[in-house]
Image (tube, rainbow over all chains, first blue to last red; front, side, top):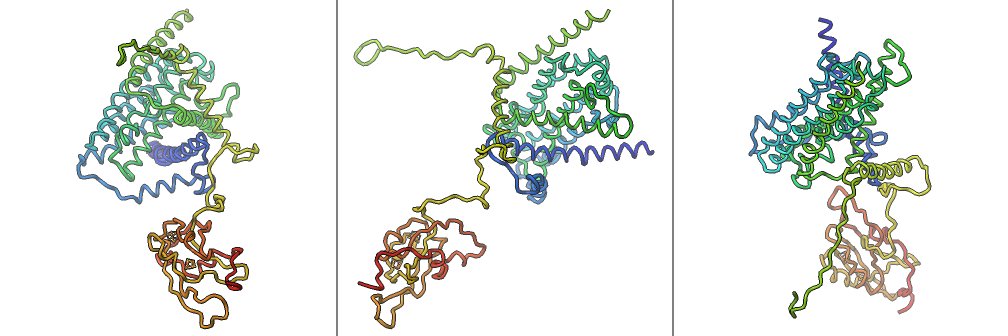
Amino acid sequence: MTYVLGKLLHIVIVAGAALPGLAAVLVWAERRVSAFIQDRLGPNRVGPAGLLQPIADLLKFIFKEDVIPGHVNKTLYVLAPAMSLVPALVAFCVVPYARGMAIADVNVGILLVFAISSIAVYGVSIGGWAGNSKYSLLGGVRASAQMISYELALGASCVPVFLVVGELNMEAIVAWQKANGWLVFYLFPAWIIFLVSSYAETNRLPFDLPEAETELVAGYHTEYSSMKFALFFLAEYIHMITASALSVTLFFGGYELPWVTLPGGAWGTVLSGLVFFGKISFFLFLFIWVRWTLPRFRYDQLMNLGWKILFPASLVVVLATAGWIAMVTP
Amino acid sequence: MDRDGDAVKTRVVKRPQMSLGERIYFATIVKGLLLTIRHFFGVFGDLFHWKTKTTAITMQYPEERWDFKDNFRGAPALVMDQFGREKCVACQMCEFVCPPKAITIWPAEFATTDNNVEKYPDRFEIDMLRCIYCGFCEEACPEEAIFLVKEAELVHTEKKDFIHDKKKLYQMGGIREDRILKWQHK
Ligand code: SF4
Ligand code: SF4
């Protein structure tokens, strides 16, 4: 009983407060970093350095009229935002964000993330379908094609990690890296493929074809407003957090530091959480930084990159890693 | 061939081929990332005053404002001469020339004719919701009594506050050196 209650509390804290809170800060960071990159200042009035801006945005979203246009498929229209947010939140559950602090420390670890995050396609494509307009439908179709294509490369780019570590459990992967050094030094090409495909999976620039505001108004969420739009927005940012967390856990030593051994006990947990936060902050910054640097890919270029370059490259990396392991193991 | 049957000379424009490095993208992406991060830290430095020249071009509006030039066409206002006397003689030229009919003048006559001036505006109103800042009033005025000043931010919550009365107009216009001095000599 206490176990169940403890887990519930854990879930509420992570999925109800920590992730949305981090996403809110991320929205603020996105706006300020983009401003800085474009030689502007960005929102700096609400609260210290504009930090309360997300709260103001949230209030605005809540108090906006919740319009359901007459021409939409109502059931799907209402369902879609939830269907895109929930998988985003659930996918985070296996990530050990501090020592021994994964919500679900399951042995299939990363496979669960892939399974759940493929469900996220439904939220986006159903949202596009339910909108019953050409822009959102095109956005939804693009999103499903893109996410399915890049899932292959994403999954294949993680296989070398499992080959090297010999486990799927995330804590075990972190422990291996603590003992042997960060996996990115062994599997740099795999990491590059992982990074690029995770950008495509989260629908972020340079792969934000599902939104592509220059062509599709706003893509799959064209017909959405107020809190429903905010849920899509939140889902995108939580996907970013999960993708960064995976990148850190699989390739950059997770919550552990190289050379320095963190103390055990409660302090160790807190410190390892901070280490993890610091690492994912860099990757989140990279997400934003890349977004405001690169222009959007054309759709055929996107498919070319996914199927003709990244997918074969990831297979080559898998084979090469397997061959390397076969050679070094007696 | 062109119209006279001569062979048309064509010029082959060489398209630059992307080199291998460019086709792999990563080097160019890194180059782009370095460019944007330079700008990022440029503005970041502004916040902590690391350098003398600022990178950010944002103007912090209510605190910083534009420095308008002298011929800026802001709100029209009435001016007094250097002796603090009213220059407007209520000739109503500005009222007639004003394209959107923003100006309304109620002229009045002086009881005495000791000075050279016979008329003055009893009430002088400019409806700033109608004014289009064309500056015709300033051009038309024979007495150099009305000028477009640098006031450009008119924000009120009540519609009636946008109608500038005589007091407000003189307060905005202030004193302007006068060369005519019609009060002293004709
Ligand atoms: S600026 Fe033009 S519109 Fe405004 S009061 Fe003068 S004449 Fe009328
Ligand atoms: S402001 Fe000038 S033009 Fe208008 S009534 Fe007075 S003197 Fe005449």
